[in-house]
Amino acid sequence: MSLLRAFKWVDVAGVARGFVNRGGSPEMISKLLDQYGWSADCTPNSELITTDKIRLVGEIFDGEVIDTNYWTATVDGGANGTVAQASSELVLTSGTADGHFAAVHSVRRADWVTGTSNKCRYQMRVGDSDDNVTVRFGVGWGAAMPVITDGAYFKLVGATLSANTMADGVETSVASGDFNGTYAAPTLTNNNVYEILYTLGKVFFLINNVLIHTASFLTTHWLHNTTNFHIGCDVSNTGDSDAIPVTFRMMNVCRLGNFKTKPTYKYIAGASAGTVCKIGGGLLHTIVVNKPGTSLTIYDQTSAAVPIIGIIDTTKQDGSVGSISYECPFFNGLTIVTVGAGSDVTVIYE
Image (cartoon, rainbow, N blue to C red; front, top):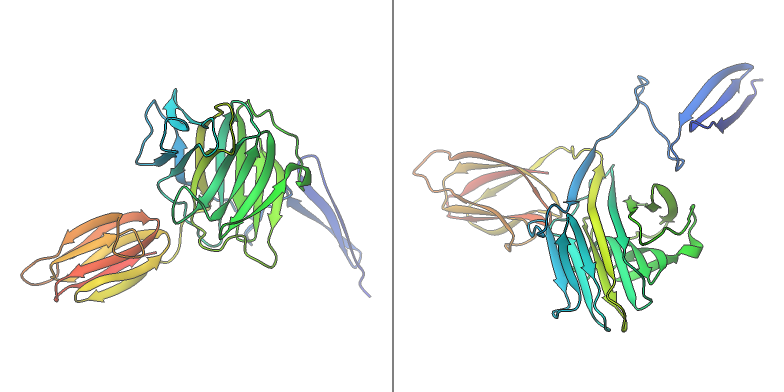
């Protein structure tokens, strides 16, 4: 009878090594692990599987002017909370009384592709701390931004840190004393690197390349409305305080893996007040105008509402008008409006 016995260990290089003894014939096995215990995989041809990191939203803050093509800033309407850019850094400053706030979020949303994971990353420092000032930074979405209803984020109340997820407006917060990873409180006034790596089943929180907490969701989803998020930060007052600055050198969200899926298509004949091709983010490849109409409008939305990607004049006497290559990402949805009874178009997208 064959006896199967196995053992393994992880050496200082992060390689799990061991032997499997099948009927007295030992064979070497090894598994490459990183510092978080995540393992690497190979193809059947023993080639290491690697992936590209694709930036989805966010950037460094170049110069002295906030680029409103990429960032939306919101303050409390007075001269209290502020959002400003100087010396290639973005600075949010709290007000000094209850209700004051300052917020910034990306114009675009980082879309999700199944089979990959997304990671948001910050380099930032907090000028000081005050128990009446709350700082939140991470990824999120809400129908009335900057108010979010779904997302994952770090939160500082004074100098107390927590790791948080939110689903449909309900926050789940884990205080630093209950973190399940390796945590040593950072010096908040120094520049630190904060990261949130999120999948559909887990959310990982890291500081300075150390995994401090993992939130796992075995029976319920950690979000309700969307998987496509803005990146941002808000600073708010719950009482009288000093003006607390929060300074960012960069913030972005990257996809760990390429956006490579098979495209699909939608055929639209005649006039259409609004054909919804997709809900959520994706990529518009090509518009093919098969027969003449009057016009065609492309919306980055789930209805015939702004923002508009483009307007095409489809008038022509006869024959096909041709195709227009866009290769353009959309973030909210894809809706097509056609004008003219003779309109005949094919939309290719993913």
